[in-house]
Length: 112
Image (cartoon, rainbow, N blue to C red; front, side, top):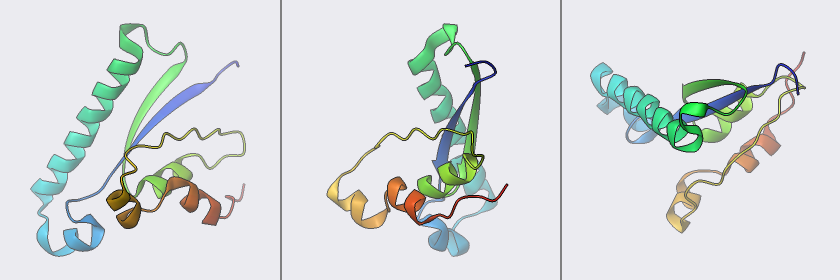
């Protein structure tokens, strides 16, 4: 596939979620959360591909959003392919965080 790019997206949220962050998070705390997400993404990509890389152009993106919203917003074009891992799916996580599949199925296709 000529010209293919691989975008690795790391969604992150402030401690306590977006509602909790409005009253309790400082700019420093949000900056620290974003920096931690960037570092985690680097670690994951290094572990997955090592120094050789994936063989295509690789771009890492950290987004402050829920995972579903971040992924659907990133893969908007008709030629984009969205591949999703499951992540942690403990019973508690399923109650507090909606699945990416549920987000994608509720989101109308982007207009070109």
